[in-house]
Image (cartoon, rainbow, N blue to C red):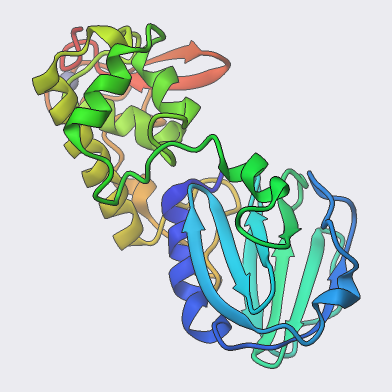
Length: 271
Ligand code: ZN
């Protein structure tokens, strides 16, 4: 599943070319997770003025309104000239004078949603409950530790919920908890301030490195140029069940938390 680093890599790879582009045509394909929310033809002539990211949403800010793009479980974006006719998994084409932005999404959990403004109800509904951005200054120790102390759920589940801090998906939660030496099942409220700081720095470290390396290669993600990232190759625990811990050689364990796979080292993450 595309996580924050993949979405950020996509944003960076598209921004230079897409900002300033004028929309010539919009073609929705099969229904996605949510409807577009406007007549496709009403987008024609609008200009892309910025490409931002909030959590795992890409925000194409237009000279009037914005498009919120989510890659869902299996989505990827491509911006190119001279694309072939849309295939069976191409569910949105936004043709511009800089090329066609195409959403390919085999599982169709992704979405492209128009909002008249960032304050519009549809935007507030999708973005309103999101926690702080992990790579921005607002992700500070005081707020993070206070948020942890209010939550009794296991720390891994709290990270995945995204209402305290966004974008720490399944892979990166397992990795950050390993780096911080915290057992994924530990109730968030029991994490001390020094350990919260370790975790905060680990989250930043893992996500920063993942963005720098171009996102992970899991499943069918590829960035907007079609190049695969390779963060997965140096994972400390994720997808390494039974393999020796890279620090202490204890076999990595796999458990399920809320239907999601969690990997950890029972020696390095004792509590
Ligand atoms: Zn270990």
